[in-house]
Length: 93
Image (tube, rainbow, N blue to C red):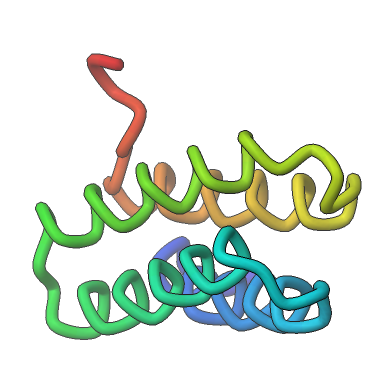
């Protein structure tokens, strides 16, 4: 089983693929932007940027129930991978 940090980028890519397949909208574009920011922040080991991008992405997905359960499940897998790697963006919220 890969280490928690090694599960983050595959989780980002899986969620990106699902969101990319959604109809074009401002919410979809916002989610894709935050996914890109999250990937760059994680690669650069920038904790606060990871936290901010993940928090904003989570809120965007939470505010988009019409995107379906697969997107929600993929976000939960990403949140879990981030939390297990020490990036708990929901702490204190």
